[in-house]
Image (cartoon, rainbow, N blue to C red):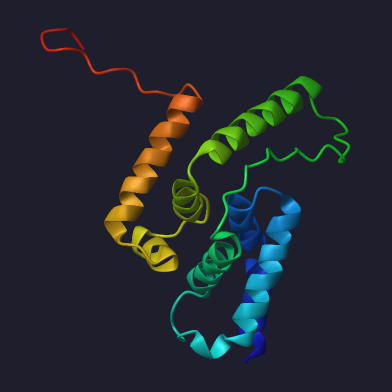
Length: 174
């Protein structure tokens, strides 16, 4: 194993943690999942194909580890708490509070999505993976990625009150 791969894994830790949080109901479980993923990745580095995306390979390991841990049960998803520990000197308190409330609202809406939709949404919209890369990471067809993503986006838009205006009916002015 090269130091370069180790460094790449270290640089991926924040992204792995974000994806883990989309799977796990709490930060403690997400952190445990990241640790398990990194351990498995390092132990099985011979299974990584040079020239492919390390992030997709680790996301797939993470998802499979999560499925293995929770195959028999479905946990209720808890709503994460926004970190209030940081003091925000010089910030507009009302804006900060509104932003935090909106973040909680979005987190709730995302947590309410089915896990399959949440996984695809995180990989494509947050991590920036292409549909093919997300499909490879999740071991599903590209069409499934597209349909899950469309359903996730529509559900989030509805839950957050961001529905596009309805199209005018035939004969109505635009």
